[in-house]
Image (cartoon, rainbow, N blue to C red):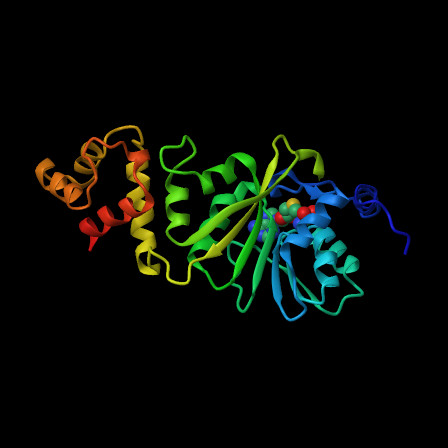
Amino acid sequence: MKVLKLKRWTKALLNEYGIRPKKRLSQTFIVDDRILESINRLLKMESNETILEIGAGLGALTRKLAESGAYVLALEIDDNLVKVLKKVIDKYANVEVIKGDILIFDWRNVDKIVSNIPYHISSQIIIKLIKNMNYRTAFLLLQREFALRVVAKPGNRDYGRLTVIVSLRANARVLGFIPRRAFYPKPRVDSLLVEINPLKTPFLKDEEIHAFENFTRKLFSERRKNILKVLSKVTGMDKNDVKRILQKHSIPPDKRVYMLTPMEFLAVFRELYI
Ligand code: SAH
């Protein structure tokens, strides 16, 4: 087979199959060979590992993963792309193409997860990855603004509910910057590659997640107000009782919501809900 540059290869495939990328499925394909190479290197695939690729698209990354000898589960929701994907990975026996929706798909026995995330469901995917932590590492290409919300520090503009929940369950860090020109069709914003490593013993327990999500949603809806005021309002408790709880955990009552650390949110949550 003639080796084409990734951008030409992508356009040729789309043309051949008469496919127009769908905005509503966030279809934007990686078309920069060098960036694809560096992402592939960062994944450090071993031949005895299994990897789930969420939204495999036309299979640019899928092929690279297959070459490592690892077992690849390539999940894709779009029928048209599934057809092309099957052709593209035709010669690899170690790739399984699955037509499905990540929001209702339950994986088992995977070592790693990778995705150039369909950005319209970024939050839902992250939350799902944080609830079902049966994998070792997830590598996610996220829109820059969204990625910053995942890895922000307390007191930062981007710090919020998502940051708090993720950091009580996993370590998340940015591995690299991916400019928008690396994708076709070109998105309006740049991306960051983020690595997520689930904690062996998460601070926030499985059975607490749901209530904690609601709790932090209420608090962050008034992120700039002081914690004493917001907590009394949200719980309907007497201010003096709230003050005592805050004192017990050395949290100044006039600290603003968005300045609290994830562990402080958890401590207060446990006082009130357990
Ligand atoms: N991995 C490819 C394509 C990324 S674009 C590449 O990097 O080139 C995002 C892909 O996710 C698209 O192929 C889109 O069809 C798919 N997708 C969108 N929503 C999905 C869902 N709910 N479940 C699985 N795949 C989905």
